[in-house]
Image 1 (cartoon, rainbow, N blue to C red):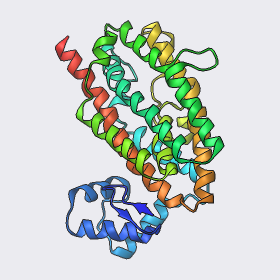
Image 2: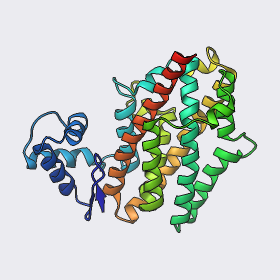
Image 3: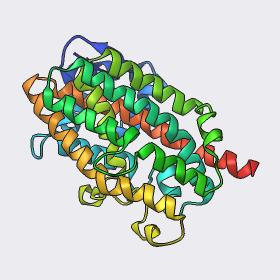
Length: 298
């Protein structure tokens, strides 16, 4: 099976030609969603069906460096390029309002995160995948190996900039966040567990300290801010992700690559990653927008 990385339409084969032909047809009809995706990801040039199929084969090709590295490079192109996500840009010199928006929207993200991990555990027979996901849940909600839970560190970060736990926990996610959470809920609860795994754990690349090795112009934040300019609680939370997410994403993508090859799901996994990354992009925008709301209010 495969999906359109733009609209999510499902196809009952795993052929790139099916996806490229779908895009060609939608572009011929001037569908804005598909045209915008093609302009951003493939090319702004008008092409024949054959030329577009060739471009898709080149874009999806990971033969020279492996599936995991392909995901890393595509993630960097999407989030850390010369024109990065607006939230990444705001995190280079974060204000307290940036942090407030981060805490509020990310609280809702973490609630979905543990549900997504639980769905993957329930839907796979792989012991190593189940153990990996159980460790993730422990770190997020209960702490692990003597370290505090990530969700507690998040709420303490909010408190350090004047945002009470009650306000965060009583909030409703913004629309972009809510749409993303619904998507991840659907994928992890209903699609193949490997599609859910790549959809969620590729997102941990956002805090991978090695992104510049994959061609990034920016990193998630300037490492210098950990030594001053932000609250101690903010530094503690950011440092926790900065020091662990590179291993989380690396370990997860190694598992994704292994099982995608075994199950002949490599193209499908690529498409699910691309679609999830688009939802994540808009979710990060929601963090920024929430911060601007706090700034106007306070």
